[in-house]
Image (cartoon, rainbow, N blue to C red):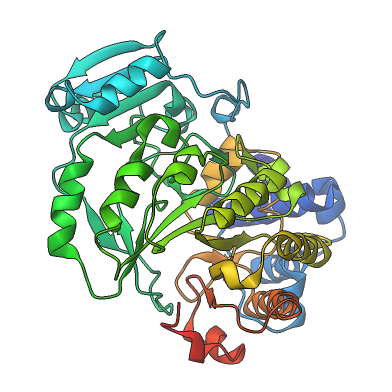
Length: 438
């Protein structure tokens, strides 16, 4: 349904009002697989508020039935076929690898040369200068980011506190900011917002991270990689894990976490560790992985890798984040949890986090452009307490209750926390006692 056709139904509406109606009709039509005409023809009012409210009730039935605050995000529809993600070859093989002059003699450069002998290697003065002069940006450029690797020497951005959303209960996590960009493509990934990044960035001077850590370190801190990249996706090349584990053997009062959706664990298995390393996997039902987590390891491969890490003496973690709502979600997630505990003993689990799907409004048109056939945006996503798009409060609460009950069937002593959720949710779920306990 195009804007000019909306005008034929409601000639008295201005451009902005027609845009909101168009957006609602588009989303209902896509979700329910019916024509825009079937939605609009029964409407006999020319009052904007009346028309909008009627469409809002259709678009957000749960929130309407439960009298929840309906704050929709209704941006202009601007979907360009050129921006669509092309699955292509799942094998990662960058065409160009740029090396900062200061990293030209690094071991990381040599590792990439051995792994990708066909790639074109080029020296640059600095990543900062490259970005300043680079003219490629936007969604189509982001789609090609796997073609370009940057080997750099990090100077400033070594560590930071987890950027917990405003108003949420924090978990006290710290980020070891080792690299930027991911070879995997998840429909919901917030890294898509950073579509001005020139490619995948890997620092060569991990020794500088260790030097800075001695000053940054906090007592009994929980720190890890995996916030702006996948911790293990190319560990067979970067070998970051070997250096990190060796370093943290001398910092036993800190806990370091690797977070991944891969099965690249060979270095992890051969490293000698001091029991303060946690290897964590993000988990989702197979149908969500198949449709939304492209190039990642399968659910069975992730759990198989977790089993091997337990056998090697590691504690492991699991992140049910994002939990995606869909028809039949409860049974599917219960299946994942049952499968998990058929392979892993609760005593070997360091923690489990749960977080429902949420994202900044700016990400919505990016997902629509890159994955126009996605179904994750079809559900009820409204502006929440932090102005991120989230499922309605009651729906989220019911989802958490279901998951918590599924976990309790296997163990009542699991360290579980909510990721980026408001204090009220923790209270309503009787989880306040768990704050700070992971």
